[in-house]
Image 1 (cartoon, rainbow, N blue to C red):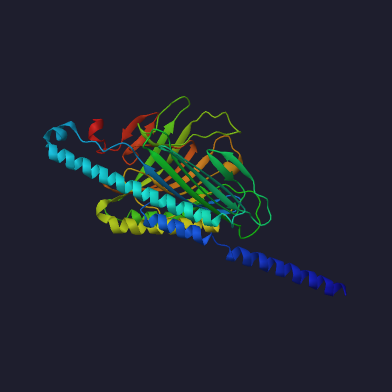
Image 2: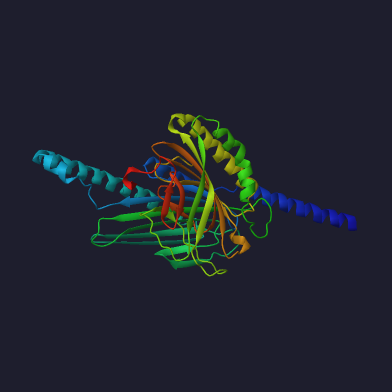
Amino acid sequence: MIINRQMKHYHLFFILCCSWYCICANAQPNERLRELEQTLKEQGFGLSHIQRSGRGIEHRWMSTMYLSGEAPRISHELWQKMSKSDLQAFKQRIDSMEAVRQQRVGEAITTIRSTLSNLAAEASESYMYEVHHQDCDTIRLSMAWRDGELALTSWRGDGGVHYSNAREAVSFQYERPSGQKDARGHYVHIYTDPYPEPMGDIKSFDGEAFQAVLSPCLKRLLKLKGSKKYPVYWRHDEGYEESVGDKLIYKVTLQSDYGDNKHTGLTTGDLYFIPKTYESEALELLATLDSLSHDYVEGHYDQDYTYHFNPQFSYGNAVPIVSGSNWPDKQPISTEHALYASRDENGFYILLIKTEGELWMPRDFTKLKSWINGEQTYFKGMKPKDSL
């Protein structure tokens, strides 16, 4: 009899485990929200998708829409050369373009509002607020679905209601202040998958192991004629200040409970260059690095990471693919490893870096041998003409 009871308990435990795994396997993001996101893409709005570690494996889709009241400018020389009819035609084109933008944003807002309104009855909690008065618009919509029987935790801030422990949540905020033509809308959809198995604390991202996975692919890159590998050295010391838009294209400011927040930073690593004549090879390389990166985070979901889907080579910008840090170790100075893609008039770049402290990315990073407290040292022959 004792053996039979033990077997029954074992079978019950086995059934419960199978049921849990089936639920996890069948869990999917809300289908109507995914359809909404596809519609936004078809309407011409960018949609980013990231995956990262957290309470579980978190997926986040985001889209931003803008309306600007600033009209395109033409130079004084060109304005003087244009006839009255040319100027009138130019203004009509600008007005027409503005009308199209207004229509696109209006259609997007209508689609978002309609979808969330229909989903509100299914959500565990929802919040909807709209004000339209004279030339002022405010829309704040949010809703969430519980994770099992866990009660939702919510708070008000940044103009809306936010949820911290939901299985799935979506929000949309749109603001056009009174007396202004500028407007901005921000859509966020978060879905959290449970981890494949119970876990303790998140581990630090293993930058060396990640780099070892990418190394064979990066070595093949260097076999292309004209391809090169450059060292990276960017540093800013205590007390040095710099604004984004001047010498930087990216700036992180960290606040830690474990240090004195001196806001210093040292970034080292490697910059890989592929000449522009090898565009197909560069795209193939990026796809391979993307696949390797995704496989790594899928296999190391217990590490601190953020993975960006669908990376692209972008002019004058650094597009992130993967980043991961040691924040769980509670060190006074954080360490982050990151992989980026970029391009310029000369070709394509892969950036593999390690940052101790705050990451400040110089504007001319594809041409710099070093950047130390704003002092720029360029690689031979790469100094821009306007810096001579």
